[in-house]
Length: 277
Length: 347
Image (cartoon, each protein chain N blue to C red):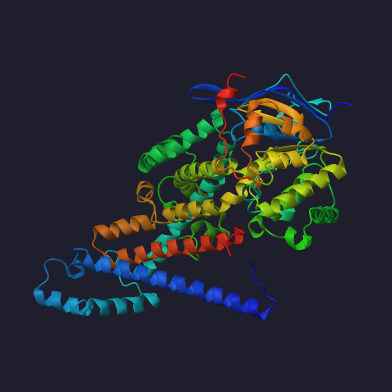
């Protein structure tokens, strides 16, 4: 069976006054119908990797790769127009903050329905039913009322559930979740992630979870890639994260505070340990 | 929150909103009256002298001053002025020797007609141009539109008017020359609205309509070009701002067509700021472009106001200022209403 996603030597660069700067420097991985986590600090290139897969990096940004295959089709050679039937319908992305990622002047229901209408013609009534079912699937109690609300009228947690509904309603095969809970309260984070996890597993989809939170990724993913300044420095099964060998990963793990510890100062990353890798 | 007309509370709320609305308009208008009135009294122009002339005797001068009510305290003068204005009496113009209200009813529609065609051109072309420029940022299309918009900012109105006349009227003969209508057609149709195009349609006089249109098209197009320049620039910058927002990426992730991304997702949120820009631009045109009205001998409010100022005709100046102020108030209030309709975030 071919993997869902095959990425080989992915590079993303942007021009600056000092010449082109590479923000992703040769990332390679494959993803089946499984849950893969990408962790790394801000600026490590993890979000850019996610966006490059959907070909959302716009000029003057530049994406190159030796291979970028999705379900047996080549993503690199596709035109912008030819990417459209894939986006949403086959691969989708949950964005970080529902405050900014939902259109402020469209109702929640219209935005969810649009995700379907972009790919198929569905009668109005059937579409409304599908939106209602999807809102119920993301645990929204009063779906008809919520569908008529505008994004500013819903809470952050509800907004992110709307986002999940919008991205999963066309039943894609691959979901990229780019920091899906960083903008949410801690109490809501687990609910949202449990929901994503449940829907992914039940529908047999592939998940690419991008986060800066090692514990969270270890809990919700099967495999983990650790990224640092545009490169993958560590790749391991989630269960083996504690046995990671790369000094960067070790440094990150050492900096996680534990609930029953008495350390006064958390260790700082010693970047000289891996510079040059 | 939408108003529910089926419930008693809903109707009460509607009445309350409407009363508040009328009250703010009345207050703004009163403020406008006060400012124009006191500025009119403070400027070193003697309205009595303007009427009696500088060869009048002191007795004649004093008698006129009392007749005009200018001997009374300023505050009383203001109160009676407000009373007159409410009754529609703006006084008599010294230079035309007619009632100012009558004069305004004649000159304002001429400007209104030209400004309206102008803003339709400005919006009809400027908005799509701004959106196109933003959607193709950095391309030759964007550069071309920006250069055109820059020209609209930097080319003097009178120059463009004269060149337009020389080219399209004198050389090519595509349009008619200065004035609202050929002398032959003057006064042929009854002034119902004062808008020559509308009046000629009402009278079903297509010859007058065609003639009036051929007179109107060039000055209106030039006004349109100036407002187009402003509207296109503002639309472009609003759109660029929107196109950088996260929800635009969301729409693209969903696989929405680029056309829909631009015209539905990015354009819908900019309608509110765009209304402000268009409203102010329209109000600016309704003020009357003195340059264009002079070059095209257009009997509009800009021309009227200029002549009145040069003749120290204070009643006419105050009346015209009042009309312009009322236009601004009207357009601002209309924009307010449109905001509420178009932006779900405003309640």
